[in-house]
Amino acid sequence: MPKPQTNSASGVAARRLAVQALTRIDNDGAYANLVLPQLLERSTLDQRDRGLVTELVYGTTRMQRACDFLVDRFVLDDVEPQVRAALRLGAYQLHFMQTPAHAAVAATVGAVKGRGRSVVNAVLRRVSVTDVQWPSDAVRLSYPDWIADTLRDTLGSEAAIAAMEAMNRPAEVHTRADGYIQDPASQLVVETVEARADDRLLDLCAAPGGKATALTSTGALVVASDLRANRARLIARNAASTRTAVAVVIADGRHPPFASKTFDRILVDAPCSGLGSLGRRADARWRIDADAPERLADLQVELVRSAYDLLVPGGTLVYSVCTLTEPETLGVLDRVADLGLVLLDPPAAPWVPVGASGTSATVVRLLPGDVGDGPHDGMALWRARKPA
Image (cartoon, rainbow, N blue to C red; front, side, top):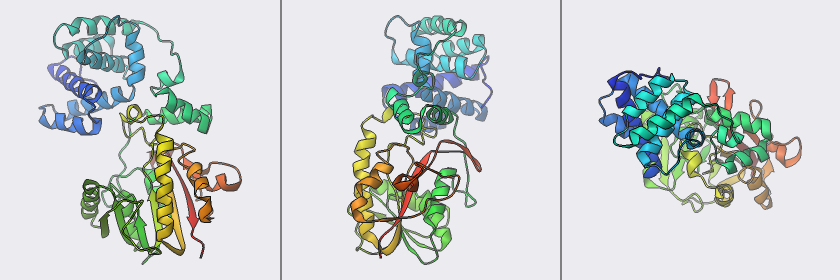
């Protein structure tokens, strides 16, 4: 984490840019990972201050609910978006970055224009000297109630809290030998496909292409498809940058343009609610709705059925999602039971079976946290073979 620069013009400028980004994210619906690089590119901040802005924007966005609770104890009226962004920013520095109060307050107030400065000054000074009693773990850890409840119901209270805490830590960069940046959990998914030389392999929902490009190292003939042209182009660019041979196809995975019984192995890395990868997507927890797991499970079932038709008899299917909800993991497997898939033994540690026996034991997951090379996303998967 960059050391805050608080007593300088550059420190104020960094916070002014952070306030601008936070306002765009909250008020205009901008995506943090898109708007922040654009603002930084146009700025004259040095590398140190750019790092500070990145930590402030992603951290404040991630901890938005907790920051709101910290300041709303002392906010009497509605405030304009710029002031709300500055209050959150100040609360994040005071409570989560442990920035000295005088410095955090002064620099944040300096980043605000107009009459809102007095509100920011008064509220942040109160925040800096007042103890906090959190009303719930969901507020303390800054998650919507429905996500906290879903994780608690799925994992149990202790594991759910550990997972939410892990996803509140800044994501780390993990770079493969070929230069591609990919989370360790995704790399572990690639291993479970167990592709072999000359296998005809389909990555059905492949963007941005990390798994598809990794799978080429096995000598398999890899086809990567995705629904949208811009996402397919992203796969192609990543294949070019890693110097890997991937055939890229624009296709709806529910109705792919391939003949039945074409592929030896298929990876269905399905679109999902992403509740295991919230650490990498600072604003995702505020964009996902409570109906998403059930809604996406319908799509996931369609994708599995489509993949089944494309498999040769005896071919294998790996289903993976970067989420932990029951409808999108075990629930999908239950809903395709009529296909007669032969469930394969689950992969070994660090994968952990969801249940102790029966069908649930073949569904495995990784909880967000540390394993192997370091912090990783949460992930779940199961593997099966098409009857010969």
